[in-house]
Length: 360
Image 1 (cartoon, rainbow, N blue to C red):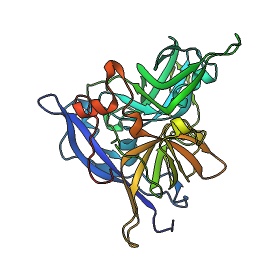
Image 2: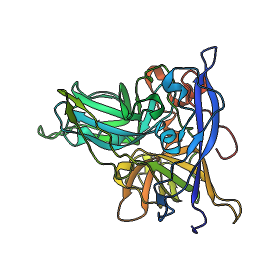
Image 3: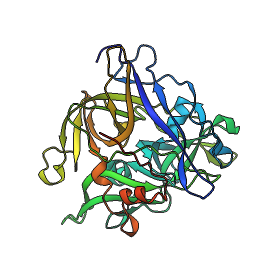
């Protein structure tokens, strides 16, 4: 990649309900992510500029009306969120990884190993029934979504996971002191969070019905290097101070695809996956991976990405080498009531973007 290719364009949509109560797109525009000065053009924090994604205000209250404008950082953080957890009495909130919104009603995708991190670290037990997994009361587990400064408030709102599904099998150990081990079918988890305070819809990213192809450039955006968040006691109540959580862009070519890895187990990453050559620090696990169009001429400097094809799964921090879980096969896996992400998308009832077109 030459120095002149230093911009990434992300298609950002704004969703709301129409007068008939149906979800729809109220506006959209590409957000330009330019590396900060001196950054590696393939792994960078981006410059944040003011953007406007719609000429029409969203119909709901103060929060919803402010989803249409703001700086690039805020607009992306409405859709790409840090996954955090803590237990009552902890001194800090731990950032586990990254997730992203896929429906207006609050469905979130992250990596299944991110979701099961508190269990793997023996911080909490789980109750399980098939692919439904629950943590006990007292375990705070969910995502942080920022408040727009235009509301007169700063900081983020914590949204707990109210429903979570992973797909795989639990392997019971014959040794009584050993806990059951999770064997994932795919490294993707689908969770649910509550609606925004004023009833506005969450702002989803668009999922691709197709998988990556070899040679396509993958663009991951997530919370690399995000540290834990200290909990301060003010007036006898625990509060969360302002904290740093910077989004990073990491990109590189897809080196290989493994669509039948759930059966063939060619690589150690679970389920249908792909290999791509990019720097992916640990806290980016669960982040969306966009497929992108290459610049069409030598004069162009932007890779353009509109749809999410994968989820960050595993990586080697010592080198530019990582695996991503394929989104399209997971869209066929069962949710509640025998629904799937694909059938919910087609129903139009949850505000999941439908993207159609050659190569999408």
